[in-house]
Length: 600
Image (cartoon, rainbow, N blue to C red; front, side):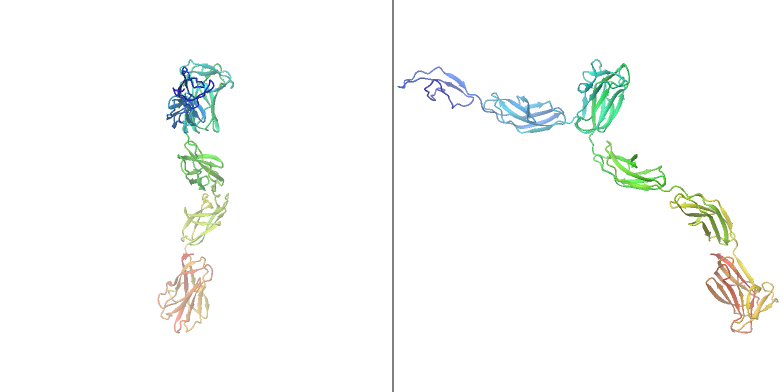
């Protein structure tokens, strides 16, 4: 009988009730019967409860919240159970780390800057466990201000623990006796969460028996620096060791303190170290582009380039000459001065930011400084007046380290011309005028020597050539006379006119200077003189016949032609002919005059 109702029969003294409900209490009784179905009374009751085999429901809505570098808080919705939920099991990254009797849990065993995955299950008093909840993921914040006390340092040699100094960091400190060499060391190795630039500090308790040059050596990404600290002063505070040094993520950076100070009977104090992140900017600027180099003198080359960009900002540029840094600038140009002349230089430029991240170097730009050496001073300058408007100069050649390009000609202090040879003719002079000349040599770059010693010359007056009739050459018969009082010189010549030319008088001057001349004739006037006496004038490249009236204007110079170019020598002439076209008159051949009015 179960709970008063018969549920079965048995021919033995045992029976298994297989129709029970879990976690249920039942009361049983048993009676005996015979073949005639005579039944005894019921036995005393026996009570039993079936065990709980039903697991709780799965927890839902699990959330994870990182509240510090070492703590993540979890929460979830409660599970249900046919009997009752006894608690919850907490799993991190697949392994159980704890239990909770409530629907929340704080994991305080986390590392900084680490991602964790959590799940939760429910269990009952019979240890029936539900399935795992949904996953919840959280990442602890990075530790950007890392403090390592002396208890996490590693030591070599014997160090003693002290607690008496009141300016210690934490509960105690370590100390070791100074020595001439590094027989004892303390090493702090931080776990760097975020790669970046860090300031590093030390803390120690000060005292009169402390080292005055405790040697800390800081090791960072790609470098190290030894810093000696006077531990007799500035104790009980953070004292700077290095600033803005680049540390990689992980444990590759460290600080070593040794007792090898070279002092005797003093102590080095090993207490705490601090690593403070000042920037996680590890991105260098872009590489400068379009670098150009231009030589502007014998000692200066100007550089320019296109600006770089940076995720934070470009702080400046480093200028490299022949592979060695020579300058920094915040602009996109730079003038490199103090260079050697005629020397080739190769330049590169890189950009850097405030944290010292440096870009790759730009493409190279090459320039050669200009020639800065002037030619030697010309010597032996001489000046010779060769005409009323011309002075010829000559001098000895200059020399130059590259080559003489030419010479500058100075007259009375002002430059008037240049010449590529060692001579020059000044054709802009005035007659009867003194001039002083100097000459300077210059090269292709324009370097100019000092001016030479001076040379002076005075131009002659304009030329005047007068030829009287005795100097003329005649054809035909001419009569010489002296009676006319308006004659030039002591006599004159005349010939009877004719219809055509039969008699001529020709004056052929020997010109000293080429130039431009006015030509004049002189005759004695009279009533028997031809009124159309024909003078033919020849000059350089031309001629002209002029008919003059000799019956008037005698005894003076009468112009025939003006401003005609004559050349030095005897290639010019004036001819008077008796061929006037009529008879009964005379033509008078007296004198001819050439008056220079201009030079070449």
